[in-house]
Length: 178
Image (cartoon, rainbow, N blue to C red; front, side, top):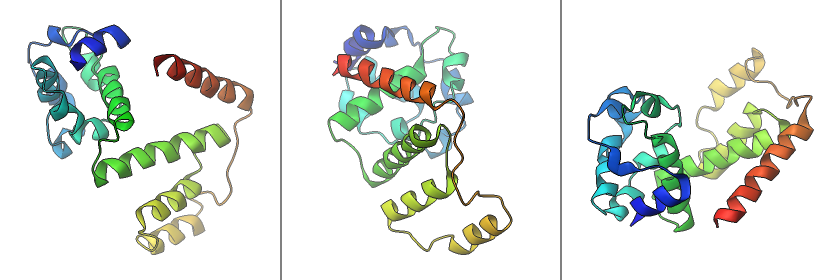
């Protein structure tokens, strides 16, 4: 059962959740989710791991921490969602929408890894190539570039050594958990 693995791996006891729904009522993306956050927690409590892992909810979570800060039991729900995303990705459980979200997450991280911050134009191009919607929003994108809203060239932060160190540390941590 994932509930025990979550407790062992990240130290969160999801059985403390008593369904007050404060997490769900504060979530800014709940309107797009197939299961609410409290329903994910209940599914895990009941051992319905597949229901949680196959849910679009884990991919739509923006990790904004609203749920975790509202939880009266102090459950770090954001970390639980991260755990579920990593487990679903490892098991290759995702539909097309979830795959697009996971792809965007990877494009975002690659941009930060390369430049120390996001390079919007590079991210847009990669996302359009990935989704094969290359010409969607092209007019809007060109207008934004011409008005200087989207930089044409990437800008790097001055502390790339620290950025590389952070990503190296994450790989080390992930390697130990694998």
